[in-house]
Amino acid sequence: MSKSRPWKIFALLIWLGGCGSPTQEQIITTVKPRIVASYSILCELVSSIAAETVEMKCLIPPTESPHTYTPTPTDLKQIEQAQLILYGGYEFEPKIEQLIKNSQNNIPKVSIHSLAVPKPLLSQHEHETSHSHEEKLTADPHIWHDVRNTIKMTKIIAEQLSQVNPTQTNIYQTNSKELIIKLQKLDQWIKNQIATIPIEQRILVTTHEAFNYYAQAYGLKYLALLGLSSEETPSAAKIRQIVKSIKQSRVPTIFAEISANDRVINTIAREAKVKVAKQPLIADGLGIEENTDTYIEVMVHNTCTIVEGLGGECKEFK
Image (tube, rainbow, N blue to C red; front, side, top):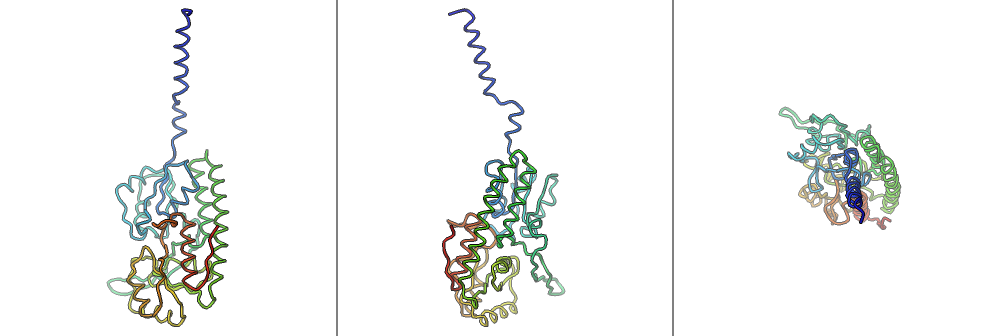
């Protein structure tokens, strides 16, 4: 062995070691942006579009109602550390929305509902004061129950992700286009299933007013026992009015919801002498049961529950 050979081997090892260690620039470029989304439907859409390109944090789990969810210290920490915050808006998740607006973190804070549907459906909201009982018009935040609105949400999410992480724009464009194709098929599938319900039975009665967009988009008359929040308590007059409407319309089935109290809907069913659907609807987010943990699965579940409850036939979504 020549005397110079050990030095050559030593130099080679140093060179190989240098190749295996990332530079400062490489480390910076591999850090994923932190994205915070408020509720489960929105979180699932973001995850579908962003894939593995971001560090994703979802604040409100499917087991909680966004209407009443109380933020935790961990939620506050996630908001303060985020580089992009996406939330519903129109007071869908009021306590989270207030926390986001009050945050000192000077980064984009985007109300997806407001951008997707700048002119939302309005609902009468009962409001009690110490002096009187009032009703005011309130924006309905449940926009995703019309699949066309979810297509708009998908486009906005992709745009927002591209702004915060421009090097991955091609991925966001590709994934959002693929998702939109599926959503367009879903929208047409829902219309086809609703069409099997006898015309005189196309009346949807639910616990709280979460399905305005669904009813309008897919040709159903709509009655709700409660207002936009599932935590409201209906007045005796409202209950009498709903019972009378159900009897007059001869609707065969009314629908409970996973996130709402069954007591009210069961009282209405008993007084109106109608049955309650075996499967509850999923109104305010993703489901917690198998086959309801994506947006598409939720819409399929709700549609088949409604169609079969109202006398139609529901085919498999492919």
